[in-house]
View 1 (cartoon, rainbow, N blue to C red):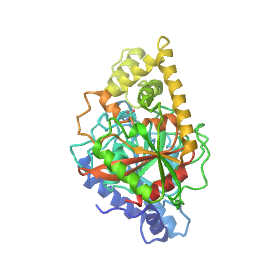
View 2 (view 1 turned 90 degrees about the vertical axis):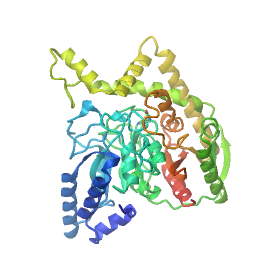
View 3 (view 1 turned 45 degrees about the vertical axis):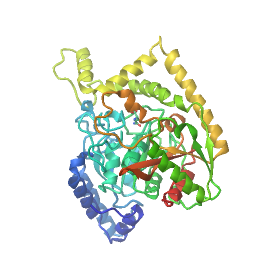
View 4 (view 1 turned 60 degrees about the horizontal axis):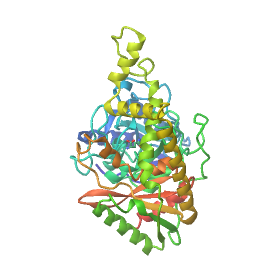
Length: 472
Ligand code: GLN
């Protein structure tokens, strides 16, 4: 399958009539079928996509003005409420759930003329780092079919890297956009918390959930962000946006980047480290001022995340009671049995594990020892990040400690699986924007470089990433 042109070129072509939206959608649907063996897709939204494309082409030939993403096909992770197929979040309990409205993010992309062609696989409810927790199937890494694509947005990342679409959207609660981007060689962007509305997205941990794009280039990711970002009356945590994220011209000269000491030491694969060191050297050559920055509470971030996140998960998943959405246990003799059987049969192992941990850390006997303490450390971490950003413009490190691991390698040991989030969770706990861009390979497997900025400095971060990308 041929690579897609830049998003702006596709939209420009469609707007001028040189390209047809219908042809873009057909090309995308064909690429999805051709790469079916990678199992990146849960369902296609073929009928609706073709109808929308035809309508768009008609409007263009009638001389009507259309949006900046006219005719650009995309894939949404299956935890976005979208028309045209069920919304399952890759869980059995949501099978058959037909969304009554669409996520704001999807509505905004559609308003600009983008066309959703399919729903991508994920770890059920976005709990995971490999797509192996999907209740349906595991997605394969596009570079090596014996390896995972990362998670939880593994289907979205794979769909972009295999050129099924020019971009996909995902969610990042603790790294689920950046980690699969790193494992597959895509660009994955996690915006500042609140920059993109969470309305219509299946909630995981509401205080860290963000929505963002996966694409081949930073420029394309920024175009997508530009269409989605900004306040939304349906999500009271949304924040004001910058004027535009689409203009990314900026120089690297004089920018100050702090290399995160805690990420460059123990536990980091030495070949991954070599790639990151090479990237740092190139940034230096380009005039970036590099220094080392220490964030002493960082080693606690993973433990903090795995207390706060399950606490919020246990609360968010309580709405799946077998009565209102998706699956219901039919043979229950009363309502209580219906609740408990629908949940015990509908939820997978990982969702249950997180519900139990979350309920435990929130219980009156343990609240102070776990949840409250974790929130205290989270505040400490936020203060350390603020302090760091008063000295440097950006922070840098690897996205993950290793390249993509083998399918099955970590499934028996959840703690080992959780370790692959060690470098991504801090950005979620502190709400800062973070991006993973490809930076070389180790034995044919992509390495991701992670860059972060202070809250709401999304535009500056995207400018930096675009300029960095051009160096290698
Ligand atoms: N891998 C992390 C987890 O399992 C992050 C998930 C996410 O960002 N959705 O919780």
